[in-house]
Length: 270
Image (cartoon, rainbow, N blue to C red; front, side, top):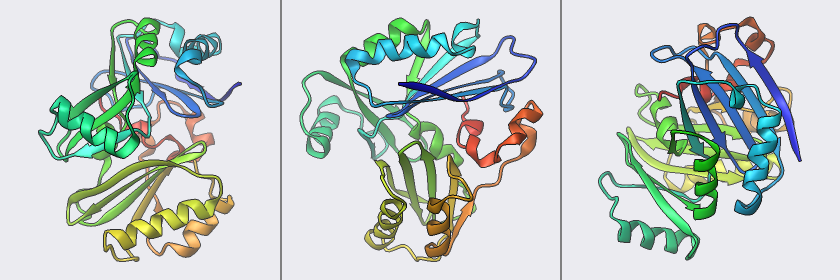
């Protein structure tokens, strides 16, 4: 089942760069212009869990309900929001080394391929089913593939030596921990109830010996009137929503929603 939850468009969608993100239960599409950090359009679809075998049908169904996926664009960047991802020391991208680490963390997989990209903090590697990658290449022309971690790390506030970052998606969240300006932890996890998130954050504080009053910067799909927000705000001393420069929006239609909903997509630089 596919449900479109956001469809926001500016008047000027000529010569834009298209970004697409596929997560466990969502497809996000958004547009910017080269050299311009303004969000020009945004579409968000919620979907059921899918497999490589029905991924093509999911994309076809999304295209039937999407304006952005069917119009001419300058370029397309596709981000696999998969939890089978690792952050490894910079330069550690040897194929055997990556495979050994993925097999250790997630188990062996004979029908998957490992991809990697370098960031200022580390090497980001992710594992994906071969068929799913092949289908995505067929569905999108001249597309560049990556993982959201390559973009999320660029959002880290360098003036905060130690901080946590929470980004919410439907049914899952990404948690990033930085201590003394060094990346300590980055992982995407599914959750069923708000307490799942709280306990996970508290465990990261404990495991990495981080002070519990450390700032926790939050963005993504979290409602300020929800039980999730209430519990995190009540029990996490440094919890706060990330601030968004509203000049990043090209149309007032974006302002009908809480600006943090569109993080981290606003700040993706491709």
